[in-house]
Image 1 (cartoon, rainbow, N blue to C red):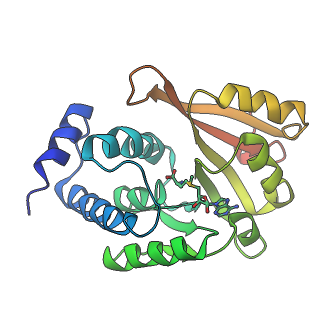
Image 2: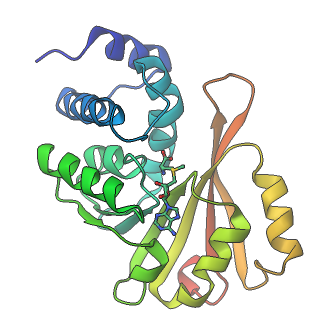
Image 3: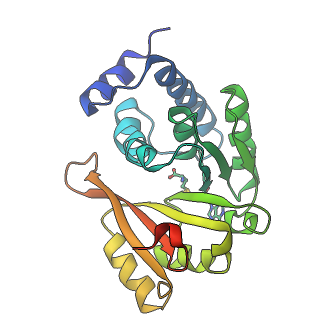
Length: 219
Ligand SMILES: C[S@@+](CC[C@H](N)C(=O)[O-])C[C@H]1O[C@@H](n2cnc3c(N)ncnc32)[C@H](O)[C@@H]1O
């Protein structure tokens, strides 16, 4: 089935060449998202151009940073970004979603069932999962400040390889706040990707936060 012409145009204008089966699956996901958005507040990005430039753009920069076979947790998945498009674009990685609001987690379950994706959905606070699971990468977008995220993760670094945090231009201010509160003393931060945001003015970034004691990420 050909993809929606507006979606195709937005992809082309952004320069994203996504194989047809994956583009179709992303389209199906977005249609489900918009359908459920009428009942639950899941996204404000309700046209193709905005979806491509605000949501897919982040995922396109995140996806190449994940190693094949990695166990990935999208913490605070909300309507499913970045976890669901990531699972579609990278079938070679294992994606799980954590969403603390039960109703949203239930909808995420519906999405992964309808899309036939091998994605586990947890109706839980992501940091609580670290008691039972280990994830190589925890991906986070629009969930909390760097201070909050570092504080949540602080007791759990034995169960986490790295945090991959998607942020806008405020990340520098947030890093200052986290440092000021001593939340980054045992951590190291690297900017793995930076790219212009859809508004053409601001920069989006993917930040990697790791524990200094983890030899895999030692600098
Ligand atoms: C603003 S939404 C962002 C959703 C999505 N990541 C995005 O970028 O569109 C934040 C979501 O994180 C959830 N959340 C907040 N803290 C959480 C936590 N500690 N664990 C799991 N979910 C959390 C909220 O319920 C909400 O649905």
